[in-house]
Image: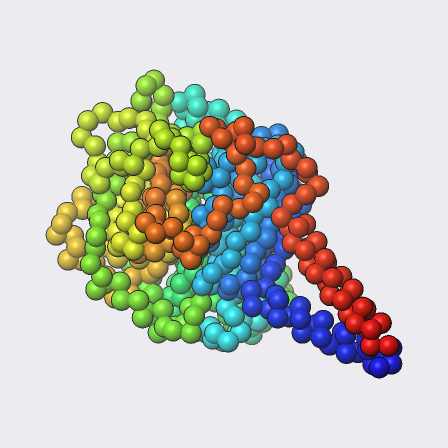
Length: 593
């Protein structure tokens, strides 16, 4: 064998070998350096949290069943956890990035997340889950694309555009946190950001000069997919684009029945995909608006985000009044009816080639029912706290999942009530005992005066009903048992209820919380613990080798070599494999001579 022929043979076989090793579940790698930077999104210099010096952070772009590896370097002055909101973490609750499952990443340390986006598609976002940090940034988009063999239920768009909207304060997150700790409210936000930028100066009185605004450039006669996420603190926002319809196509991993909306209410923590057709005459640029909902509009006028949609053939700048929000001041059912109109596309394939609606949730017997009721914040043991069913959750020093792993007693109580407590509220580490392979019905009853959204980690649940008043057994007669949307975050209107159904097939400890950051910080959350009685790696992966230890297990934590990480080890492992094969091949070549 000649040298040239050998190397041709070798390269072909090494390529085949490596493809066999890694083609089944490809890896995507991200390196996140989390730091403070100074920015002025509303014209006032302030400290924000950036990732890789960017605010908002970079988009994670993946495909169904990819293994996602994110090495997080914490360069803040306080501990950090990154949470991947809506990513189900199948078999890997260890990677969820909330206090119930993970010890925080200390300052100047790094920690590498590795998880598979198993059997998921859609639009999600990530954010820091501790210390009120989301109020300072640190968030970004998380996209899971369909595998090429699975068709999407619409023509391939001409572009994919991420839009992050959210209310914003010019006080930094530590000041906001201190206000809550002192028993105060946050007050009205200072504005709404779109992709980390302030409003276009559509009004000289309401918007100061010199504020940087977002411009989204498009071409005429095209169709774009807009992925819109409300990453804010507590304000529901109405999203609209001047003179354009928004064709709703997907919500948090589920394709929807495609319907046109002139505007849609997007509540805190929610994500939607719209198809936008650029079919206007481009006589000028167009306003993109995110304005506060369910508030006194005259007082909240300045809490409006405005960006610009610019056609490549635009003839001038946008001017004149903004497009009107819904005119429903005296019609409290308008927004709820809009929410009810969002339906699951039961004929579309999701992450797998079978129709989404082949899982007939309406015919499954419910095994456990929980009525979770919130109230306005109240005083418990001299502190202003938020409650869920009369319990204000206290995060334990040792994460729940870690306590289970090491059989540490007394960390939490598995006694969360299935009905609201009748006595005085209390502060507890009380957890819901979920039944593995059970089917749970949860009624979220909002007895607060403001809008709330609720999120559950680890699952997409079915939103089957919502109405004003108190939920009762008779309310089940109004449930949508066929095409209720499957998602991870749902709104609950003030003085109303929302019912969800959850198939408890994902083992782990899963956070159930309000997405309203102030109420979450004050204790309006719990966890659902789902355990397979027969421990097996098929339902939950082992604890990761790089797990951090804290609380009762803090003595197990070794000092960190900051140069090491799981991502590095994986890359090094591939390199070692390559060079091992190279050495074997070289030996074979010498023998063949």
